[in-house]
Image (spheres, rainbow, N blue to C red):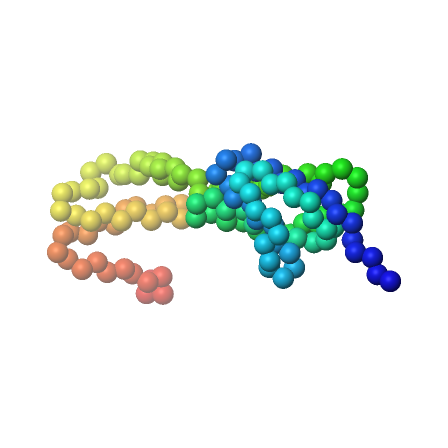
Length: 136
């Protein structure tokens, strides 16, 4: 004779009034559903919890173990680093050599680990030639 697992109260708290909480069994069948806070009497087993708010969604697996009293679970935050606003890049002034930039010229500054070479200035309309270290 087999006995079925005992039931236990599952409480899932999201602390966000816009989060929908779903409990799915191993077959993907919805066992319970609520908004912000879920409370459901379920058989002790493994479940998938799905959290949705707008276009954001997270899923996680939990075990509802046998025991006394409710099993309280805190929902993860749906907002991660990808949803946070991006800071504007900090623009730092470039180093310039006095008198190196003449209107109509393209100046290219190259930075190297050891020492920086002087800027290469090319008059507008001309084709730059870059010397190869092998030609030296």
